[in-house]
Image (cartoon, rainbow, N blue to C red; front, side, top):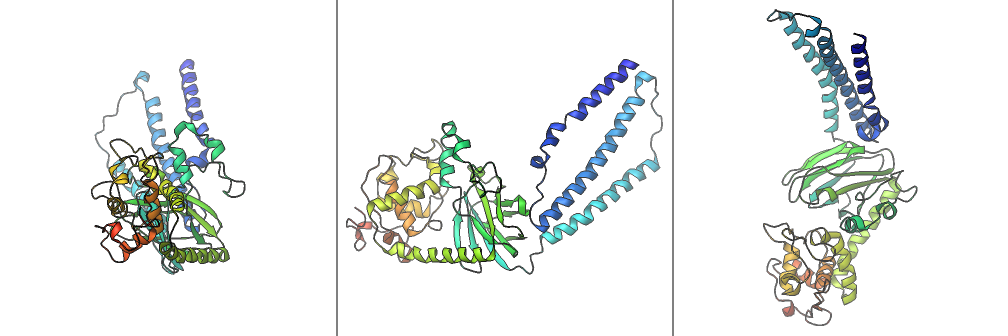
Amino acid sequence: MTSNVSRWALLSLMLLLVPLGAWADWGALNMPQGVTEISNEVYTLHMRIFYICCAIGAAVFGVMIYSMFVHRKSKGVKPATFHESTTVEIVWTVVPLIILIVMAIPAARVLIKMEDFSDSEMSIKVTGYQWRWHYEYMDSGVSFFSQLEPTHNQARQMGSDIDLQSTFVPEAGNYQGEGEIYLKEVDNELVVPVGKKIRFLHTAADVIHSWWVPDLAVKKDAIPGFINENWALIEEPGIYRGKCAELCGRDHGFMPVVVRAVSQEEYDSWIAEKQSAMASVTEQSERQWAHQELVSVGEKVYQANCMSCHQAEGQGIPGMFPAIAGSEVATGSIDLHVDTVMNGIEGSMMSKFSDVLSDADIAAVITYQRNAFGNSTGDTLQPAHIKSLRDGLDISAPASVAALPDMNTTTGVN
């Protein structure tokens, strides 16, 4: 008898010690508390229901373990002979009902508050693309795309040939103590002011995405053809990271979200800079660019937008994404190349970039692709040609480049 008790005591001690390792890093396993009022309410609700579930689990399994131990056959206990008990059935119906009501009332209150975006002070439209986000500030006219920072995108394709710990170490003071920013950084952050209720409108241009920022308790599906809404009011300046939480296709895991909350003065200054930058896009489309300038800019555009599929050296991924190096598109008719980049290929993963890239970026990346990876066509495509297609010609069937005024000179397409 004593040996049996010792074995049970030892087993119980081992079971109690198992979760201690996880408990040591409970903060990494548990839901984050967040930095907004609503995120704190969500966290409080989560912990309350978690403890209720733990209590229920302890009671149920406690009764089961006690019954199996005390009423086991080896002790000569005879099984009960009753068939049913009205009292027991009433108890196990009423008690769960009460528990559900206790859990449902605060949960409903928080859910209703999460959907109440009335009295919003500004609106931002969030559109999901494979694999980037498009942000539109509805009150100021500022809009831009945000995607994985190109150096991170390039590093992930190098595999074990790069030392992540030395390459992607956050600068002190800039990342609020974050120890790892690899694959969490973007080229354009979503900048918002603190102290303002922000209404987010979510949709998608291709497949279903999900915009998720845990610290803000904001997670909403972005569905093509639908507008979903939620909101956030951030009280503390800082950087808050998230990601696409929907399996939206290959490279789904490389679609981060970075929200930078700043003071109202810093936000106003940032908006003014963005508005100025957007105004300069028209100027870039109208001026003549040097060949090497286009190639240099095109390389950066390629790394940010094309490299995920077509790879760093333009070799593509056999069976999935075609190579740029030596391809018929990149070495053949430049009209076909322009049409492919601007309009994509229906029924394939090649999406259109006419809405994603500016005239200068499209001209630059095409010029780069036709002169990189050993293609060496010598072609130079000017942004003015892309602008002319947008303004007057059918971009789904572009006219011959040589037929456009001043496009067959050394400053146009060679």
